[in-house]
Amino acid sequence: MSEIPQQLRYSDSHEWILDHGDGTVTIGITDHAQQALGDVVFVELPEVGATLSIGEEFGVVESVKAASDLYAPLSGEVLEVNDTLEDQPEQLNDSPYGDAWLLKLKVEDTNAIGELLDATAYAELIENE
Amino acid sequence: MCSLKRTALYDLHRELGAKFVPFAGYDMPVQYPMGVKGEHLHTRAQCGLFDVSHMGQVEVRGEQAAERLETLAPANFVGLAEGHQRYAFFTTEEGGIYDDFMTVNAGDHLYLVVNAACKEQDLALLRTGLGGDVEVTLRDDRALLALQGPAAHAVMLKVLPEATQLLFMQHGRYQHEGHDIWVSRSGYTGEDGFELSLPNEYAERFARLLLEHPEVEPIGLGARDSLRLEAGLCLYGNDITQTTDPVAADLIWAIGKARRQGGEREAGFPGANVIVSRLIERDDARRRVGLIAEGRAPVREGTVLFSADHHEVGKVTSGTFGPSVGKPIMMAYVDPGEAALGTQLFAEVRGKRLPVQVSQMPFVTTHYYRG
Image (cartoon, each protein chain N blue to C red):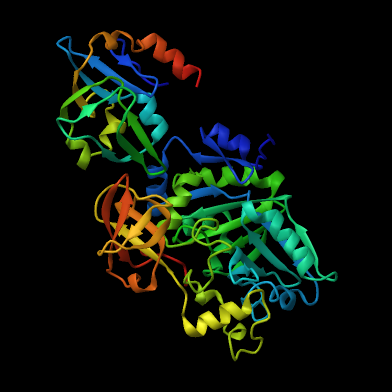
């Protein structure tokens, strides 16, 4: 079974979103997503300063077997990216909710955060997959 | 929607926690809880057990079986000694590759192992192409397992010690607990190992006997693919197809000397005119090569390759991250002028041109058991 922390929000494309309450969020991929991917060998992330639109592809995670696109769960500007994943992509398997966060985003419309899935809704989503 | 077939080990795979994927009409284990990378590294370090029962095991019987098989494939089957195995491929009239397969001289018949996805087409080809007095039988009453890795020899010493006498590409037939086991010392990983054919009803029991040994872990199709690519072995459908000829595919070594120009049984196989002349002229328009990426991003099949001066020079046919190599590795077809070892090319991935280098294959040191 995969871990689904209560305090996070989720997208239906398996990203998690931590709301810092100041108009910024941290984004990562869920435990379920890393399990489905298998051993991660490569992560590609956008540049700091890039603007993301909701639903847009913003990067890619590759395992030995396949590539999987990352989709922006919110629109906004990239404030920070987790550079350590470039050299240690396997952290995504070890710590998807911790050390292996992907990026920090300055959110364009904070109301959109409330429209994301909560833990219960995300659990239902993966249950029905 | 046709339902997927299951191998004799399906229930065991379930019990071992496998994830399944449809492959060539079969519901096959792609990985176990250890994961693709762990399974790959375990096979190289110790020993892996693969279920390859989806492949076609075919018996070809008849006085002229070897001679007739030479009319469909450019290998030397007539000269294949009893108890030996040889790699070969069927060719098309245009000089392409119809399928690749293994052939064993089993004494009173030939025993072939063909690709799962090509089973039906190969059976049809053999039945129409070998003539009425040659009998072709699909042995779908038998399962096929592969035990691969440096510990395979030690495990077999405990389970079926007679088979450890075999050298690479030799074949033996044994009895175990009253069942016939056919063993080839070969595999698809670059490691020492055994391929074991056994009756379906005995497959699970024998697999459990092997898995009892702590060195042995079950390995899925995911790691099978990364292991074979590191070993520089072609995957039919990707690296060799009906539109790749054996010269471009760098498989000249599998064409028997007796079948080449001036040989005792020269030509006489489909596409011989094309292939024999290419063998002499080496005028193929492209060449199969190995590539290693400089960065970490895997380069997948279908990726277009460019030369340093921005010309399109080829395409990737297989690509993954090689867990033992520690870098992304590929097989590709490129213009012969770009095929020299060390040539730098660029793979276009998501709009970026990533540097890759033409590299020696196999990408890892192979450990075939030659005594």
